[in-house]
Image (cartoon, rainbow, N blue to C red; front, side, top):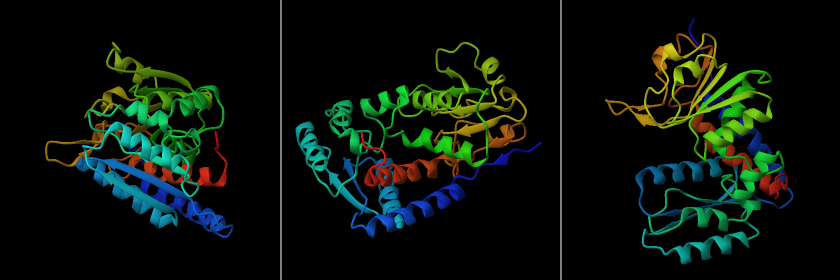
Length: 284
């Protein structure tokens, strides 16, 4: 059995078409959804991510404001910029690209963003809303994973989901989103003693640790759904995920590729969050 691919590029195009249509409807009411992106320093990966986010805004008809600052920018200056954007009525979402230079407290900056404009879903108010089932912004990567499960019509109720990774950005919110859909959720991490024993029980596996081949074919139950959130490089320098794709695709029922899987969905859900902020659907 060869797994069916969950095509993140195709699903992203479909979702972005819906976003574009809703943006057009908002513009007819003189509202243009606006996303402000702040980049501090010259991190090459961050520059790529920011460029992709700005392009996605343009493609869907949104307004994007990109602010580039040198790595010498002080924490106080960055907090002042965030405060100004909080008060800017033309901006509906604020994103400060991580990582930040070492002299800036990233958590302090995240908490300075208004929860009503926290389209990354990283603010403690957003995390609390997710945990308690209240309206708020969901972090974009796990939100994208949920949309991928929805796209294949997968019923999570009563299923066992294993999340490998416990980051605040993916692992923890992913587990909460799965729990909301009545899955039974196990979170695995570096302290887990027998990862294979747990993944072999899983109907759904989300691999999100940033480590190549953390999930291999002998660790997957036949027919399981495997979502690969990892972004790594193999020995040849090619992009790969956390999952041994060639092996696992012969066992799993569904699988996401890298690239072209979860990655495109992350930026698409950022567009969805920004749009819904402009529509007033997620205001905290």
